[in-house]
Length: 414
Image 1 (spheres, one colour):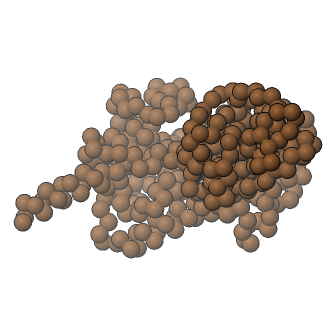
Image 2: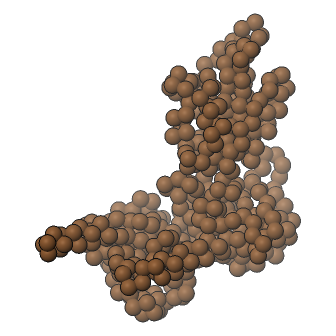
C-alpha cells in the first residue's frame, strides 16, 4: 500500500475518464475499526486512490488494496487542514486520469463531513458518486457511555449542531435551548465556555446533565459528566480535547444510571464472593459532598462491583475533607493518604496544569489509585481519570497479583 502526504497531479488523458472509473464518499464510522460497514470495506478494496481524513482510524486502511495510493488530506477541527478546494481538485485529477477514487471520512460523510459539498463539486464535473454511509459520532459517542440521544422520558428528539460554522454565523443557542431536545454538539470543545454561557443565558437550567466524550469507541476514550453550570470547568480540569462530542440534556443522566445499575447488578451476583482488588484514587475540591463522590466513583467503576473496592486513596491535604471521610465511613472503606512527593513519583499519562498549579503535582487520582493498591508494583489502572461535578476518579486493580497468590496457595495445599 503506497502512502503519501501529497497526491501526484496527473493530467487528464484527452479529457476522458476511463469507463470503469468510480467515485465514493465513504464514512469510516466513529473510530472503532469494527464499526465500519461491510459496504465501505468492499468499496475500499476496489479504489485506486483513497483520500483520508485525519479522524479516520488508520486500521481502517487494512481494507484497501495493497497497491492503492493513500493520500492524507487532513480535515480535523482546530488543526491545519488541506483546503477543501485542493481536495476536490485532487479527486478530479485522479478521476480524469481514469482512476477510481474513494474519499474516506470519519463518521458519516453527510454529517458535518463536507460530503455534500464534495458531491456537488463532482456532480458539477459530470461525475456520479456513490455514498456509503457511516455511523456518526453524534450517536455512537453517547452510546459508548450508555447515553441514548432520544428517550421518551427525557427527550422526544435530538438536534445535531456544530460548535462553529463556515460563514453561517453563530448557532442560535437560545432557539436550540427552547426545543427541549437533546443537543449533540460536534466540534464544540474550543468554544465550550461560550456555548455553555449562551445556553444558561437563554434559560437552560444549570442542573441540566451534560457529557463530553473524547475519542469515542477508541481504546483511549475518556469522558466527563457534569451539570451545565459546572460543565465547562469540569471539562477543562479533566483536560479533554478534540475529537470530542458534547451531549446536553436529560438523557446524559442515563450514563450515571447505567454505571450505578451495572455496579448494583454485579454486587448482587457476586455477593459474598467478590474479591476486594480495587484501589480508588480520588481528587476533589474543598467541601465536595459524600454523595457527589459516590456518584463519581460509581460512574468510573463501569462493570465492576462497588464491593470490589478495598481502598480509597487521595492526597494528604484531604485528611480533614468531610465529604471524603463520610463516603469512606458510609461504606467501611479504608482511606490511604499520600504526600506530594509520593504522588509526584508516579508519572501520569496526561499531566494536569490545574493540579500542578494548586498542589504541585501533575495529577492526583491516577497516582493515588496505584499507590493505594495493596501490591503497588503489580497494580494496573483499569479506569483512567474520569470526572463528574469536579470529582476526579481513577481505579487500579491488583487482581492479577491476587490470582497469582491464590494459585500459589492452592499449589501448596495440593
